[in-house]
Amino acid sequence: MKLSSMIELPINKCSPKFPYSSGPREYQKIAYGNWVQNNYQGIFAMATGTGKTITSLNCVLEEYHSTGIYCILVLVPTRALVDQWRNEAQKFNYSNIHTTQEKDWFNILSNHFLNKCLGLRDNLIFIST
Image 1 (cartoon, rainbow, N blue to C red):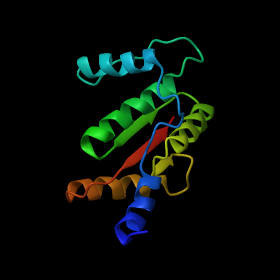
Image 2: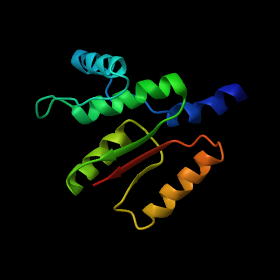
Image 3: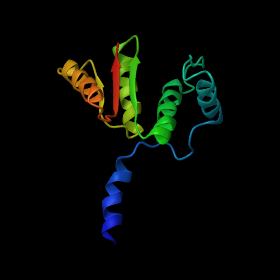
Image 4: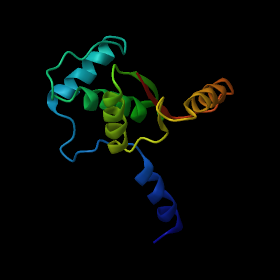
């Protein structure tokens, strides 16, 4: 194995990816397209169990593929949904996932914004109630 292949292997393992081999469902792809056409804003009005969290994280993934970075703030009404979002984000292989349930959450968030002010590219998913 070439050295360059050995170096790239861990990087590819750490890259965010869609967690299911079948890929996003057609309606999730359409939802992404609609979100982009609506200037990257909107509400996914989908039935319970249709994958709103996965659809949202796929939007982040698609933008990551375009820009090479992700930085999102997720606000949910319950702690159970904080856990759900964190678990789903981990399945996508996102790194730097934090929540307000962590003891040092304020320092983490402050450091991220300091890095951003300094022009450093720093991926972040921050989930809170």
